[in-house]
Length: 122
Image 1 (cartoon, rainbow, N blue to C red):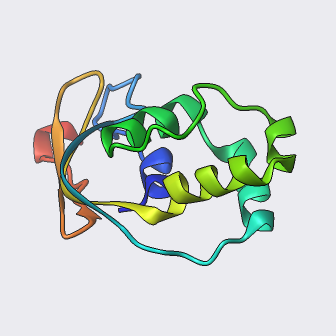
Image 2 (tube, rainbow, N blue to C red; image 1 turned 90 degrees about the vertical axis):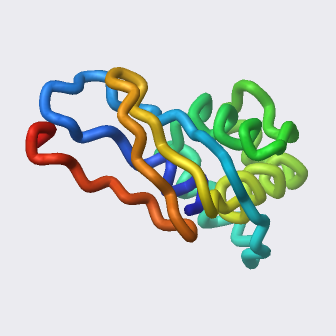
């Protein structure tokens, strides 16, 4: 699961009001090369919750992202490459996504987040 995906997911348990960002529990992650596309990154930047991306990248031993970012940084090629790496090339293979409100764990197996709810959570 890419960190792009992680940045778009939230806990949908009935009654949960603070289901984003999901915390990461990392058991195994891999880096997969993806072709660089600056236009895509510039288009996605406003949609990204930066703190969630920064914190998730740190959980995968990527300490290259700045703690804060703004649109002016999109003109910096070094920043774009770091953003690209964290957003698209880091993949959570095994672990869990944890609801910040309930602590409910959603497993990630072979890179696929299992977000199915139990009957009493719907």
